[in-house]
Length: 296
Image (cartoon, rainbow, N blue to C red; front, side, top):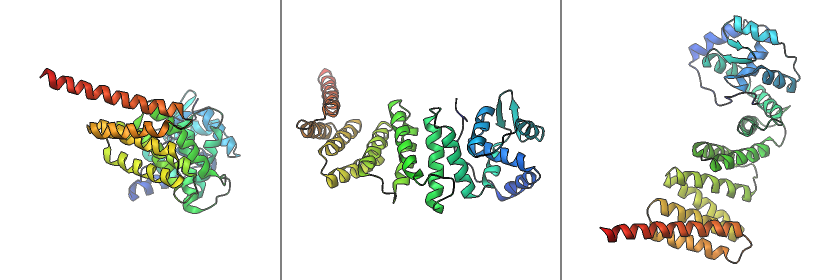
């Protein structure tokens, strides 16, 4: 079970609204404020058990009755074993009153609490949120020193799964976030190449040809820098797929043929098969097009 169903981003509230809500939050007890802030980091709703687990990861004592007090105050609704913010504005204000270091610590705590429940997208999000704050502020007590590396690995895995399941928007989002974290972080070239490959594939399926071309160019530069035949072939395969979707059939034939030729002498049967399938699919499309012309 996930700790939360919505661990996403936060809106910047107008100053007047933020000030109004912050004044109300200042009237809370320390326990109420702590619980509300933890919930704000988790998301808009979730299981009470998850909120308790998160508190334990932070070394806090969780008091279930505090949630009911927040319910009576009109800030959180409690439904059996679940909680939910009554207003996204309250959630955003509670989150924004935390210092950036505190946000990083709590996001890292959520990620630790999720390590055994298999919620890859949420774990990747919270690890990345902590990593982004560490990159901005420097080392933060209570946040792993290798949090950036962890975030890139988790985001990459989440991007892979999203692409495999056809969730193109999420594949682009996860891969983009990982690439942004990789800037200046010493991420291995092979990892960068994989992220460009995943994002380019998603962009092609989205018909975002310009963005796909940029990622393929970046992949080709890495392939040439590393003298990696496998990556060179992958860049030709992607470029051929892009040309095919864009209707440039002759270019697609040439580029997919180059990918197959490069892979013939390598020990990459799976990649060779994928490139060959793409070329066959292109030939079938080309023949179908020719038949339509003849029939007319």
